[in-house]
Image (tube, rainbow, N blue to C red; front, side, top):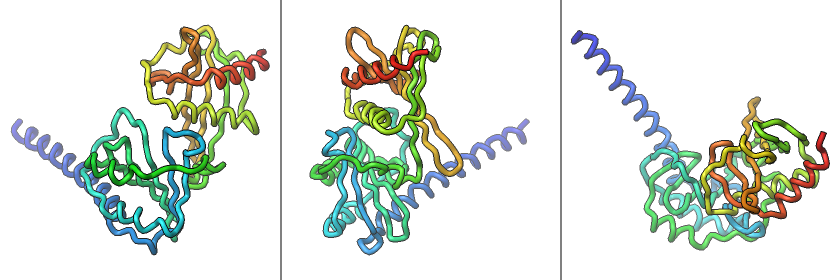
Length: 263
């Protein structure tokens, strides 16, 4: 019995060491890159701010602006933490190196520093002081995320009845229909007030906006549900996620489009 207990303790300790070592490697790798980045390594720096007004969503920095930005990145420090449940407002820098690699450097609501998807605890005042003057100056270029991530995005729309019955379907969305889908998702990102999830299957009518991300021989799907409640339009992040209000005009455009396709 004592041998089994010692063996179990040993396995637990070994697992803890492996997990700790992996966490340290992730953290060390991210910080080593950030602390040692130089102007000569960088081909371009682009920024996306979410949420923001559409015309202030994006900025591409000139080469003359690289120095102060890289000085901020070089000063990075923090301990690895779990991804927070609530994400919120984000300033994301996309740094493309001269080798063609794209790194992400993010200020998540002045609470976390995120380097290449590694979440770090950070000093709130340091984040606030260093990012407060970062402003977008244009709308997001078409195909931006496909370019920096290598992932293509496809949209589809469905009109659903009770219990998820598909009443009409339009997929993939192209042209102005695709633009409508992109505007809908962007409209959702602009909203900061979150409401508790609703039982999607209970609605007599709602709309499903499905986003499919494709890359490296794999696909990932993300669903948004649109519905009306008490005369207001809402968009819900998945079946169990929070929802936010969405512009009634956007909802009505989807409603008109899908109702013209009823079968």
